[in-house]
Length: 180
Image (cartoon, rainbow, N blue to C red):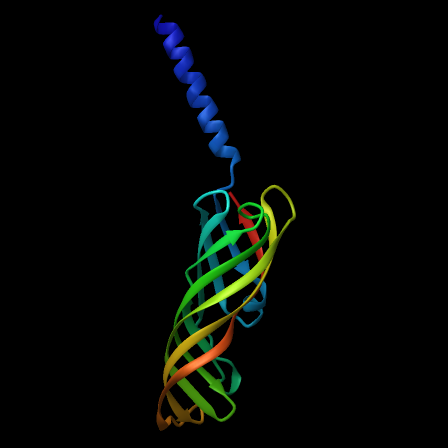
């Protein structure tokens, strides 16, 4: 009797473990266009069920370019996706929030500040292999930006403090995804 119970327990454990090891519940990816701007980035995600997944993209750019040009930022954009077929396969729609601390130069001005907001997105995941996907995603968002504007990059003469809402494209991604 003990051998039967032990055999049954081992078979059940084997079936449960093999099922879990074949399913794809997590992913890690990087946004290729963001890398082209020297922004280091990584997104971790996890499925909640067959159709819903949660995502946490993190973007970081500490670099200063020639002429003191910069697009420094630390940005997080947690979100949720609803998959039209199943998680990590085919099309999806999503919602996300945005939090960013930034410091960048544009033309003759330097901007330092914080931004918070939310957005919506849509995209498609192309299966490359059982472990690799290519995702295309685009989205728009509404962001509250609170920043200080300075004249020129180096001298730092303050022009003023500003804050306002912006409608922006908050998701432009072509991501290489590893599934596990």
